Image (cartoon, rainbow, N blue to C red; front, side):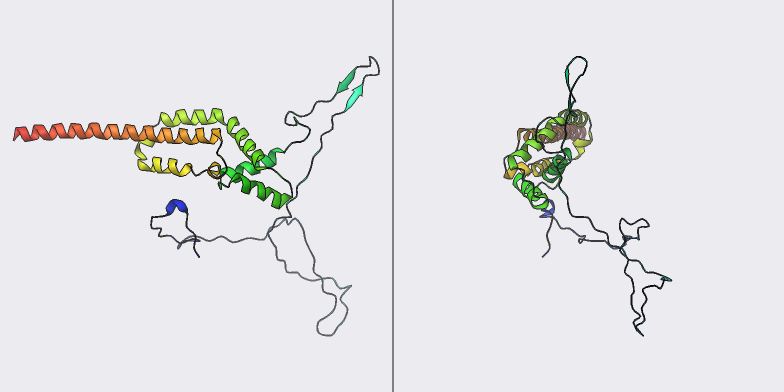
Length: 241
């Protein structure tokens, strides 16, 4: 059964999935520095049964497998030492890194992984939580996933504002037509739609939609102005005849 991209439904897609005709193919090449080597030795002659234990090989054939190791989840503990000054008796405490702010917390790499799952493939928060549990055996509640995505969104507030200003000052969007509105509506099917969209996600979608709507309005006004001008010219031409 063939699955189609929901964004392409209703439109005829000529290209089939996979490599296209004329596309230059690529294949795996032997890695000169493999991470591990398993040697398969020959112990007995297959013809006469003579032992080959002490016979040095004169040649070898190598094959390689490209794979990944079992996903590993680890717990890293930070210990800050307390020391008493032998001279004055003052107790001195070592400082924790700035990103180690709680007694127990999720690491930055795990947060990046969760944000990726929710933002790029648009997985629901519950499904992202299940994936982490299935792969690593570590429980992260959907509410925690929401908080992590919101934290990332807040950290990008300044970046989004700059992007919005740049987009509003460009005339590129004026030529995008209905595609802007279509993309804005499709963007609404974000991970939050099935598990409670956050305020930050809504504001981002509204910004995208607002820019598109403004661009469309400008485009329509410009077209209307051009149409009125063309109408006046046509009227003058008729009067001239």
